Image 1 (cartoon, rainbow, N blue to C red):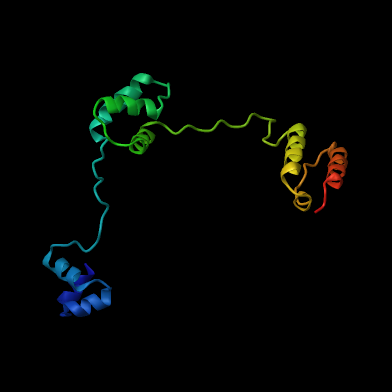
Image 2 (image 1 turned 90 degrees about the horizontal axis):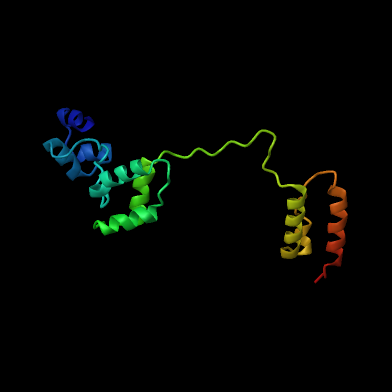
Amino acid sequence: MEIDVLHRQGKGIREIARETGIARNTVRAILRGEHSDSYGPREPRPTKIAPHAEYLRERLEFAGKTQLPATVLLRELRAQGYDGGITQLKDFLRSLRPAIEPEPNREGVDNEPSHRQAETGMEQSSKRLGRSMLLHVEQPRCKIHTLRQKRLKSRMESLPIG
């Protein structure tokens, strides 16, 4: 649109190209009507899975709530002559299957580890980390914290320094 206006004002192709930042050949093509002034969304390319789309829709509808693995469907499609990959199949299945909502946490239950899990995690990390790194590991705050802190401190003191 802008290129047509500039051309009607009597400006040359070089000058229009310089002002708009578009190549001269592109300006020429737009003025001839061979090229549109703007780009739009492209048409999607046909995929290898397109001929098998109807079969997959029917297969998923027949399965109902049962989640069929993509590997099983890939095996069935290969028997029908599909020579594409599993990624195209998974992308297509993702567009058909509804997104699974994560279950909300039950009331009163949080995602923090129990005291036992926290202690076990600290014991495992003390084996993997050196003494200096272990000093920077935060510990869970609880009533039993002081007892565990004393045990951990005695373990750290028994670690060889070197």
